[in-house]
Length: 202
Image (cartoon, rainbow, N blue to C red; front, side):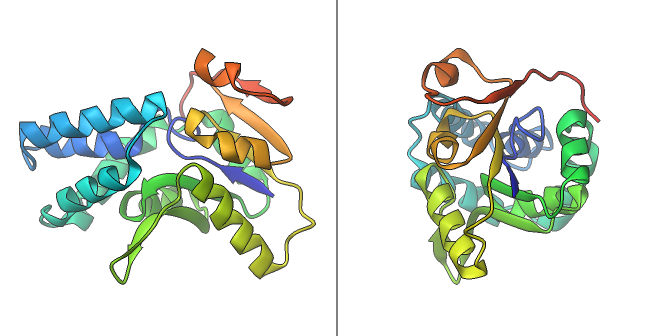
């Protein structure tokens, strides 16, 4: 079983943060909202994000975007498509039934999955106004619940990630490949892992 984080693992950028940059560049959101998004992004990279506040903040932004499906399609095709790591993408195409597990919200990540032709995704989403998190330990819990439901407990899991926020998944999975890991992440790894240092996009 092959599972991939999304941002900075499959893509070279944080797709959710750059979505907000796209909105600001097109004058769809205010400068103040963009600055607040930047603060959340910095905290995420440091590994101490207040995830629930972050998700509700982005939810409010997306709710105010007119013709949001048009803008997401334009953003993914014009920006994200050019920032996919070729090496990781080739693995995704090669393996059977790849899975993406991301903390990003469904409205962005589902479009990227469609672009990558990946059918199964774990992500953060609202369903019937109820928030389902897919961040840190919740990535593991959501995966375990699905594995039990699908009776896939005998499968070995190979996980690809770049993020210090994925330490619970790194510790849980049988095999791990780190994509461009920083020193903070490497210092906290206590198991054997593979490492890819990648620069080229698709």
